[in-house]
Amino acid sequence: MTTAALPALLVLEDGRTFHGEAYGAEGETFGEAVFNTGMTGYQETLTDPSYHRQVVVMTAPHIGNTGVNDEDPESKRIWVAGYVVREPARIPSNWRSRRTLDDELRAQGVVGISGIDTRALTRHLRERGAMRVGISTVETDPEALLARVKESAEMSGANLSEAVSTGEAYVVPAQGEKRFTVAALDLGIKDMTPYRMSERGIEVHVLPATASIDDVLAVQPDGLFFSNGPGDPAATTGQVQLLQQALERELPYFGICFGNQLFGRALGFGTYKLKYGHRGINQPVMDLTTRKVEVTAHNHGFAVDAPVGEPTETPYGVATVSHVCLNDDVVEGLELRTADGRLKSFSVQYHPEAAAGPHDAAYLFDRFTTLLEENA
Image (cartoon, rainbow, N blue to C red; front, side, top):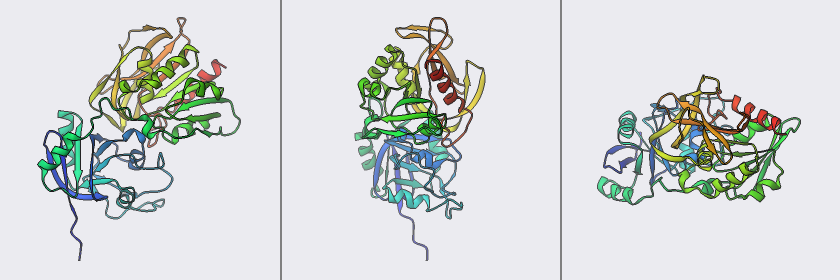
């Protein structure tokens, strides 16, 4: 005899309600509702610290069919506030699988919901924008859950990087011969990112989000790196000041995702919240320096407000937009050059470490290595 699934309730802050079944832990959770368009890579999504305080809706209808392994997580825990899927896999099948996704969500206390029309929910978020949401397996009254949703925290104005950062500095050694040393500020770093640098002979000193310029200089770095991470870049001021101090010393800089937004603010540009953001592993971006198009992995709800095609004089050099999203023209990268055109620093809004995929943007780590060579 099959046990009946526990009912679950999802309520958006505008009152839209979905009824489904519990998936993962029982209980109640709140966060910002966002959707991810990736067909695969759910382990990397769940363990990406950039998703802290977000309830992720998967647009792919069938999730969990490769189970959960111990090799693919991008951090030591699941960070999403909640998880929404249409049809969970009943039986996972993969040679690396160690347990089911449902079991992993339960073990880590992540409340989710399944059996709802995720296509309808995604279309609603596209039309109305990302918004707060609640999922509950203990509340049956939508109005009561809605009241708690409206009392929950908003993403705008949230400074979250310190909540997901490492508590202590650690070192990822270079693979093979050590060529360079890089100080990497952990704003929500994924494990694959320092690994990609170590593959290129870079010794990476991963520092807490609260690190000072003295902490950075203490490792005698050849360059500075800012990682991805959650929250509103406008609420993150200490790291912007640190980056400006590094730029004053002409320390080569590479930033990704949140590191791109903070680079923009350090250069004097503004940032703004996107209507529903970019999340997935299939986002087309053009590198304006090469005119090549790459398919890229994204997870961001904020963007830099900088003019495309118009160089901007800053106290640190000439800034230009280097990459744009071909779906909506959102700024996806920045460059800082000297007056004679020499590259000093750069950043991109997406995830070139390719976890999970694609690998089109791996060249950016080579570009950083070249930048370190030229400034050695």
